[in-house]
Image 1 (cartoon, helix red, strand yellow):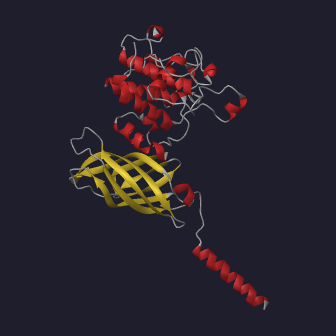
Image 2 (spheres, one colour; image 1 turned 90 degrees about the horizontal axis):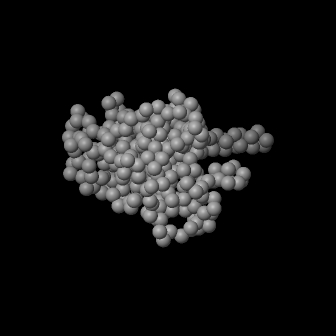
Amino acid sequence: MKKRLLSLVMLLVLLCTMVVPAFGAYSPGSIAGTSWYGQYTGWHSSESNLVQRYMNMTIKTCDAYGNITGEAKVTTVAGQGVDMNWVNYQFKGTFDFYTGAFTMQGTKITSQSSNVNWNLAKFQGSLQGDNISGLVDGNSKRVFSFGLVSEWAKDEITDADFYGLIPETLQGKDLSKPVTRAEFSAIAVQLYETLTNQETYAYGSPFYDIYGHIDQKSIEKAYALNITVGVSDTEFAPDSKITREQLATMLCRAIKKYKFEDWTYATDDQYYLDTTGVKKFADDADISDYAKPSVYFMTKMGIIKGIDATHFAPKAVTAEQIAREYATATREQALVMSLRVYNLAEFLQTH
């Protein structure tokens, strides 16, 4: 009887092992509901006519076996002489929970304003950290790279990518993570250069802590443009998370530099930002004096909002706030604000 019972238990264990998959570094819950943005190399009219395309996608479902379904939105990067309208489609594929191996192929176009017959390409690659990258249709000349982005931001992030507002150093990165002072310097410079349609130049800086940093050139450009200053005369603190009041201030400086060629940091108080009619936040006393005009101007223009109906959260002022990284912003929030400035640039009232 005991032997028969033991055999039955072993059989049940074997059956469970056969029908219930094990998970590795990933699970269905960590994949389903994720959104991604980036670019890939597509083809236009023939396999030899390659073009770059923007794409955002959301993995809607992922079952216990790694079968995925979702939806994607694609358009062609401007300046290549081909169709630039949007195409939406559904896809299905697989994901390996152990290795991060990823496949995806379109199954049906759901809306199309394009003038061409789009190819529903197959994407094969792997998830490494916060980036999915690999080959399109198995062609070594056709590559893709997608970074993680929040569902709420994916369409605006795709627009920001479309207008050239995402710095190269943030391409393919997890945009849901907090933005640093260095990264936002790159975002502000990218915005200014896109608005003016001209590249700016770096002339060095007094900051000893930026040498060899991936965003060193952008920090030096932002410093030359007077968009940013250091935390001291010789330190920039590039990897510190930027505060919301610093972010608002740097965006305003980028606007002023764009609007007025002779604007400088030294003459900033000669330029007026219209903040009339804006109700003070309950935490107005926590907003630094230098930042108040920028905070309320950005609020009035709808570029940046409070964290709730009455609080702006300009910076952390208590130990508890510092511990939970209060008053920071994410990369995607910063890029969305940059996009809003870009869209409103001609209408922003400064004097």
